[in-house]
Amino acid sequence: MGIVEELEQKVDIVELVSKYTTLKKAGANYKSLCPFPGHNENTPSFVASPAKQLGYCFGCHKWGWPLKFIMDVENCEFKEAVEILANFTGTELKNNYNPEKAKIQKSLYALYKDAVNYYSEALGRYPEMKKYLMDRWISSESLRKFHFGYADNGGALYSYLKEKWYDDEMIAESAIFIDTKTKKDKFIHRIIFPIQNLRGDFVALAGRTTTKQEPKYLNSPATKIYDKSSILYGLYEARHSITKNNFVIITEGYMDTIALHQWGFPNSVCVSGTAFTEKHIQVIKRLTKKIYLCFDGDKAGEKATKASLETMKNKWLEVKIISLPNGKDPDEIISSGKDFQTYIDSALSPIGYMIAKADFETQSIEDKKVLLETLLQTVVSYSDQVEKDSYLKEIAHKLWLRQDVIYDRLNTLKHTRKKSEQEVPKVKKISSEDMVIATLLNHPKLIDNFKKEILFQQTLGKDLQSILKEWVWFLNHLDLEQKEFYKWLALKIESEWEEQNQTSRQEWIQKLIQSMNREHFKKESDALKVRIWEWDHEALKAYSTLMQQAKKHAIK
View (spheres, rainbow, N blue to C red):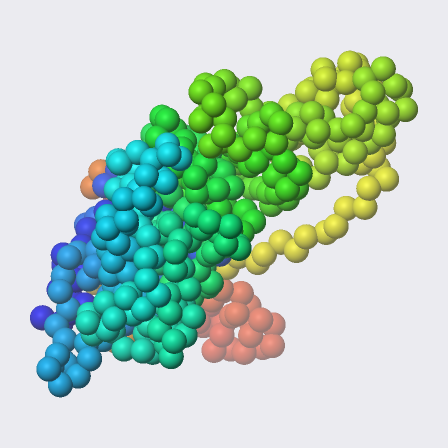
């Protein structure tokens, strides 16, 4: 048995997919929002089939067994996907190298795991660093949960990794060191915050200074396993709580997220030294559609909030903003002993936030006009009518204006606003032949039945003729695009069949055959009519035979 077969036998596709998105039972299968990068959707179109060990998205048409699923969802090569599955299943990959003669090749994931272990052990050797964290109200449980560490010595980590058989090329690729010549850890004398991906692998580091050293936080740069625009700190620890509570709190800082976890809000995460991005949204939407932004209350936090609101616009999300007073951050609010739940309960809508932050006199008509124009410009940029209506009512209430006045202003704005035309993507029309091919892919035993009942076989398409003649040959000679299309359609049909009994399935097949026979009868008769008008006597004979065959099978 090959390594791929061994790994795919060990893994449960449902458990694997659950690491990336929230699955819900749907008959014998499971459904969810698409987990594949680049496909941002609002209704579930991804299906995981435990029986087939297969995942397929009806929207973007990506599909695959466990290994291919990993390659697509992680956007990685075959070798790395094998390593990921091996880590997931706890399988030790056989190594062809002799440790006594050559260095053992290991992945960056393994290197980061070893580095985090080193930092964690180092923290235990420095009680003053532990005291520093305890003084910041970090509990012993959080130290373990978030794998805190300390970069104690510039060269010790390098020596530690070399003892683990990592070569200089891999060490340099990790971006932990200034360079492999000096062997100096760039995070030296900093508290280490390890960063994990949604699967739980360590992929990057953040180091916080305990002195006046600049910058205050030092973050890992992008590597082949770390894209900070798609990874949220704390999401691995928060994922189950986010699903359970059906909302997520997004903060700016590591300490903010940790403080919220400690004080009863484990559904909290933070952006890792970057803005909130489209990729973050795609990851979050697999777990929940409710987002509470909780950035710092200072000017920088306000700017980040407004930018994030723009990014989340028209993404089918319910967004609230937790507004903190006096430029405070969540860590400071919690440390002061205040009940953070009250801030969640009074969270603002995007429009409510804009009004709260606007500098205007409530009694000034001119100020109201200017603010109303700004607010309506924002509302009209939303696509969902329910969301728009809710915001318009909120504007009317908070600006003390009648709703009809608000709607009149909005209609005026709509007529003057230029609307950009969007191209409607072309979708391949599904024919009866496509349905037959997809059905036979799932149930090749039906081929003989279809051969007997399909009429006018001389007009069948090349694909259907091929699968009726030689099923295996047909599968082996399909190109990737065709294969993905037929696999998608086959899974769609299979999902529909699960809700039907045997009699209903047979009726469905019979209707499909009748539909296809009608299509090909029309196609053949139309072609013969053209030839008849050209005084083709052979066509007249063929047309007569065709009519007799159609009458026999009650085809009109």
